[in-house]
Amino acid sequence: MQREDAETIAVSALAFIAADDQLLPRFLSLTGIEANQIRVVAAEPGFLAGVLQFVLAHEPTLLRFSEESGIAPEIVARAPSFLPHGNTFYDIQP
Image (cartoon, rainbow, N blue to C red; front, side, top):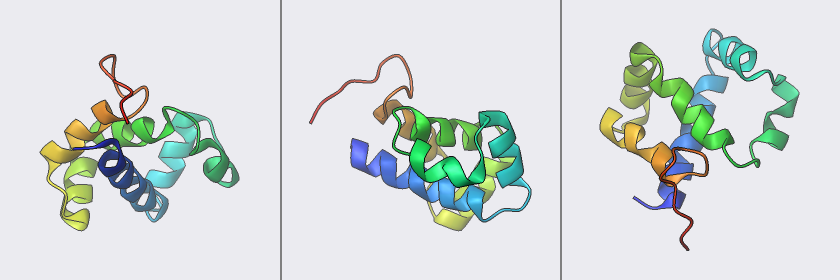
């Protein structure tokens, strides 16, 4: 997996969250951002990793996202490690 692949998964997860009337308010509440700020904060380091961590924190959400996106849960679980602030082992490589 490359950083671009992880970013694509995270953007898909964000779209999944945004389309869900129950998940979006919970995500916004936990992150402390407002819906109209998502585009701005999405460019900040760590945001996309946070999106994936949100999905990974709740197994039913992870499984539903995996089913709807066609991305295996194991792949979703690995993706944050390829993003800034995804874990302590993040390595900046081109």
